Length: 70
Picture (tube, rainbow, N blue to C red):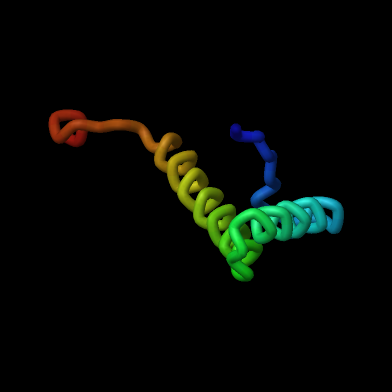
């Protein structure tokens, strides 16, 4: 099951958001017995945000063909 989480990319995560993600990491750690799972969660979120920011930026560029440039 996936739960959507909205993240503001121009600011730091607020206290409540950080507590939620830390708690989520602790719960995942309890299920997997992997002590680094909380750090992995933050790393995955960071990569997803970076990837989709890149997609959003690329979407702002106009598509041109070589004929359009002449």
